[in-house]
Length: 293
Image (cartoon, rainbow, N blue to C red; front, side, top):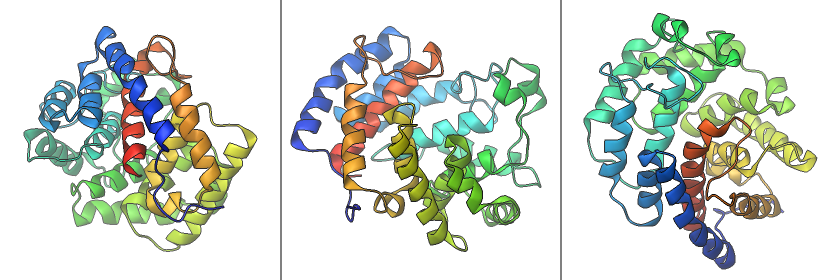
């Protein structure tokens, strides 16, 4: 049966999630990631959003963009689009967002660093630093990150018409239902985040294909962990979620809770350096599901 309303954790799931939060918060502190503990406090303990902004600002450069290790697979501290995407996800997880220099700076960086081809490229400084192999081979322009950035930025009211017009042209040139139907995680991601933030021709057709792909991946057991599942589902918002089965949502919520490791953190296939932010994101996800995502 498909979901027709927001998914909400059951009472048992909500209690189990609450029991997990203390150890998760301690994990982020032990691993030296106070941004993570601020995110958890805001999501679960009524912590003020201003503390999240203060911690996030440590990863922001003078040009308004983000780098400085927020995206741990990019060694250069220079601003880059993948760190900007992570920062925008953190901002979208806040209940309230008072006007800050953090958002003003990011808005400025997004507008001034988009290339005429619609994408946000690596700077020379970023390319000169250490890059994970997949980033070293990244080809621009592409739907990822351009459509991810545009969809998230539009939700945050950080876009201007020329920015969206460029991305719309790129999407029209490169978008493919066949790519959506393959279900590959990072190939599917830009379609999901673009559809959450913007309207476009055949959006419903694409959403149907996204939902079908997600359910196929779930059925095949191919999501590496529940965090990846929820990154797709919550990234697409209510219009995507209502196309998915209630049973799948329920099972993946339980899976997310039970995947917490004994040290309080969540696992990841990408390496230990990713675990602090993955843990904070898992806690924010559980808070959103408790409230009715």
